[in-house]
Image (cartoon, rainbow, N blue to C red; front, side, top):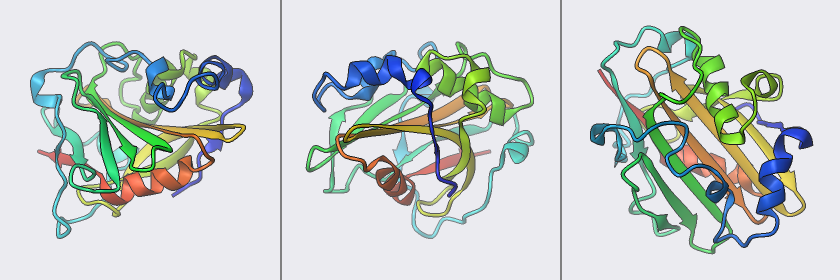
Length: 221
């Protein structure tokens, strides 16, 4: 996976300035609107599926390939942390497409979100730019300022550890705290996914690797 770029301080200052004065229980995600960049998604897109089996067929879903999806394609997170003793539920599914896990040692949290992109300034026919737009909403920053500093990485497709789903990501380090945001928009379906990793140590990129190893984007035609 491509290493995420370090987001310039002028983009991170609003978020990180608040984060540095709260404990991990506050977390970066508490600075972001509860429902994510959307009005509440429909109930059918509000809960993660169980983790896909290890035998699931891996493939790719690039930004270009996303444009070939049918408009009614069902896209969601496959939850690979649910039965993992190394992770604890910090915030269960909130009914708006978001839930949060924390490491058992209390040093990192990972927030997941999935839902409709009704409040995101998506660019029709451009899943990459629209993914940057999700990050922009989260950081309260214009998409045009996000695009130059974001990098392209991959979520896992259908099975954890498989990679294949292109996404956009930004990260930052402030002292011993680190965070990483990664998002993917699907303009053909009007939905999106994101995850936010927030750590008290400089471990966000490592934890993001753990996220991709255990969790996957599940696509059902």
